[in-house]
Length: 169
Length: 276
Image (tube, rainbow over all chains, first blue to last red; front, top):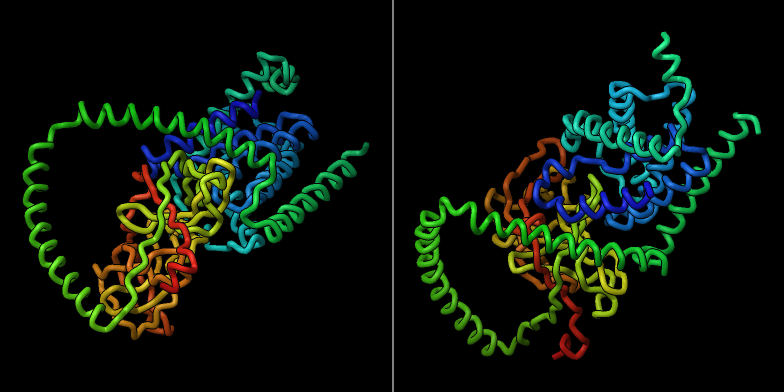
């Protein structure tokens, strides 16, 4: 179901982007989902979902097939590794996590694009839009929390003790 | 399984997928598998419906709700039309003279390219690449590498072809390279996009070349992908480099990629056309 939601968002974004190009262009719609898969879903399930959704994403872009699969796979692994240290479940922690991984994504994408023979200074001051960090952190947090809410409603992720521990503390 | 082994396997798998992706990219550029083809066709169909629905709603708002300045614009456009009519008659005169001179010199006539019309159905979903999806594919004779133009000028070239849809790499994309010349001085360079700034950069131009702001940039016609002299854009800035041999030339594309609705695919002229 989550793959269908991502597919719907890809369709929505690709067909409405020309209305507000400067704003919508900054929105990385897949990032919060990949972070969510890394943080909250099982390893195999998260891996398959990340690869599938990033491949769908690749097919709606002129980027070489494989660039986004690689970038989001790396981000999935990082989100997975981070899940052993940070379990983001509050708005602030989710926003910080997405913001930080968004900055990291720019660097990963530059590196991956370079290996694909497409290197260009993505992370240069000219090409980097600073407000996009906050934009993605806030929009991404909404999607992250919505996915989390849907997963709880469908008992995909059972309510876990960390929240209990937080409230007791 | 211990956690460390699990992560090692995950990292190895990630590395393997990365190498596989690079291998596929290097060896199968522009090709699509059957699964990809089906996915592109399915998403292309849905994108076309969404795109038309959205445009319909937008047209309704534009045509009926935002008519405040229409009369003022009309007067301005009428003035502009009068000026352009005068220019056109002068240009027709020049064209006729050009034709006479060409006939006198027995030059072969300019070959008009074959064009296939297509609708834009979607824009690139990523934050960094600039592409469009059009509703013509291999079934309509579209092939990878063909040029795409619009009534305003050069758009880009076909990058990936599915059965009914194709993806076009526009000139705004940083990975796009188009051979272009400055119309006035015939200075030649390679035009590439500048990522998020919606501008292009004319590369490899010697700093001694004569380039000025507002100069018109046109397609050089080399390679036969785009018709020679096709409008590309206008120079908006020339940044001299005191320490290097090259100068930086910034070009604003004549085509607004975000307002494109119809485009034309340039079919390569046949050998008989070329030799005639």
